[in-house]
Image (cartoon, rainbow, N blue to C red; front, side, top):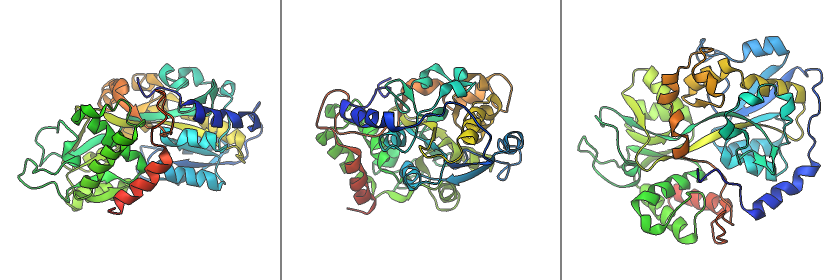
Length: 385
């Protein structure tokens, strides 16, 4: 898969330069009594949202480690929280993970202290968003696509293209899409525009939506500036997005399977699809802070996250795919083979997984646009500039 590539030499030099300074846990000690985690919404449940989904309570009783969770809605928010300190673990996506490594904010993981490491999908064990020069900086957690969520009363059949959120048009109900679509409130969304343009404008020569030359990048920004006229809201809060689909007339948007599941569970006329252009996606990794105050509880939690029952139930609740493949079929939790298929487990090779853009592309082109530029420019897009 094109996205399974190490970052360019300059970025790797920055990352590997900090490796010797980071301490790796050699043995577990007495549990400290708590573990503090930054996580995506819906990733760590203790039965408060739905009593059937609780993978925290039994862990706390067995380990003596109280689980404290701070939710974050974007990768940039996660990086900011980890930079601020006070957390042991973070469920980082690929557009944040190597930033945390390069910044010296997370430490190498001793996989020998993770008994279930061998159960992890082989495609993810050495994935470049958490592995640098053979050193692992985290434990894979869940993965999945960024789906196109749509209203089935407007679309009797699944939309075939992302154009419905990027281009001005009348929808099947005869009404314009202006003010009825949403876009993600994060700079990494520029990659979604680039992925669409890869098919819509092949003359641009886009091969990797995270490695864009100035001309390719400019085309993506132009598309997003045009989209600004259509967007009712730039979403980053999953709860607000579901409310917008129920009450504010939004009928199409990029989303996570988590929101789709919530709305379908409430009986809303909602479905999702991966259009012909493919999709961006996320492969999340539990990473441990360099200065984690609770290392033993952190390791106990990371091992717990690979439990087949937890992997199964998280994938049902969030609409994601387990990193332990047997969780789809072993009956340890609520997930089934059919459920994993519905969540896109067979689409792994079709997903352009989030990663942090760098100035020097893996293909050797020094002219690619770095992430810092994505951040400032996307703020301008959202602000109407």
